[in-house]
Length: 150
Image (cartoon, rainbow, N blue to C red; front, side):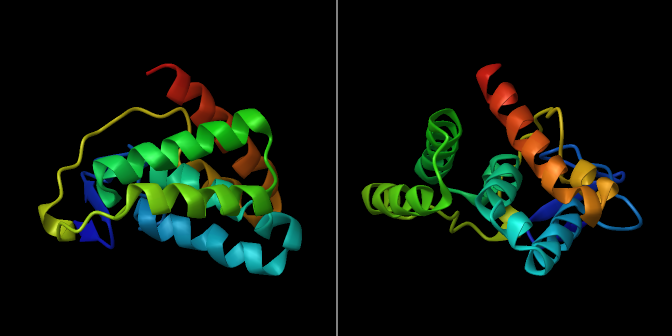
């Protein structure tokens, strides 16, 4: 099943490995915290981390250089404990250097490669809105650990 940048086979995302939950693909589960963050400014402050964690686990959405730029920005921001404003400034600088970052290949023709991750958006969705801040902070920590392992 193809659903807005996600391909689910046998109830699993073929890129991040998230299980389908309550009939939702990983992309659909990702929409929930995007809505939740509008109810809580503290959660919204984690928007960069939420989006980058999800996107790092779905590299087919990016060009090779665009994905590399995203991972580098994530690592530098995490390791440097950058604030959101600084992250956005650096992102604009990096994008100027990289050019096109999103994959121009039609969704159904993209090459997707599975990679095992310690956490996925499935974990954020299952923990729910009341635990979203803690879940997203844990997710970014796990992504950083997982990126070190490769």
